[in-house]
Image (cartoon, rainbow, N blue to C red; front, side, top):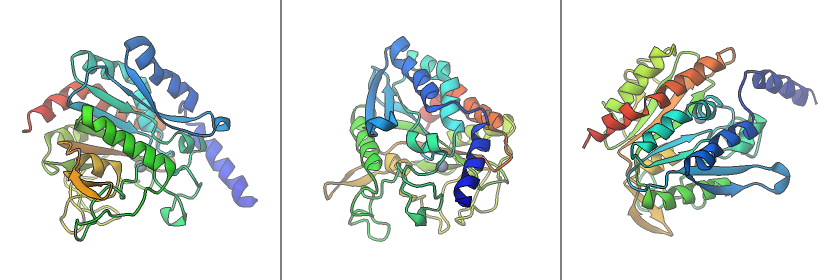
Length: 312
Ligand SMILES: [Zn+2]
């Protein structure tokens, strides 16, 4: 009981940070359809009593696209709130002819609960939590590449989200992917993960780091993450062994050149650039500052898209 009471105290304190509710966010995102003619898709629906769904919005125009994901982890609210506040920048880029896919709140159930995972308040994944973005059942095994890394999707949302992403990638091939996260264990600063055909020295990644820094987020310039990955000027492009990042996530999937579908190895979505933006969200960090940092990235989409287009 004490633990439950403590949790409630922690949650109510965190939720007083100014973040929008799921309903407020959803109504903002839905304006993409209502006011701007975007198409919306329901990826996954929770039982009716939860009144929750994972949804995507996409431009009518298809083709090589910008993808924006956020809210994979429910206790990382800055990304979804930044998207809701910066929709005009996304709409403007789309109006200039760039196909766009937005999945702005990938884990609404955990967002509502201020949990990391949809199925448990435990933050430690070893205690039964699964990620809605886990793509290991589609990604090649690390050692041999000859079979999938996992036998099955870890949860129903996970299956729905990854299958939806792959289906959509056929008509909206991801060229640039931004996945907005936060790191509540980092008190030292922000950083990004970079994957794709030019993971290191990626000009889009360098610009994102500059934007985070300019908005007041300290950046981890060097050293190593808690997973021993080297950080170079705020960017993590390789794992502790110098190999490409293989975190088993939907980000790795969107960057993957090979994957498994129904037991057969096939080409993956092969996004040129996949950036996972991580703002430091330790207790005591300022929510508004973190939202402003993610918003600065979104407000610069036109330039990020241009930089990505120059990398052939
Ligand atoms: Zn995260």
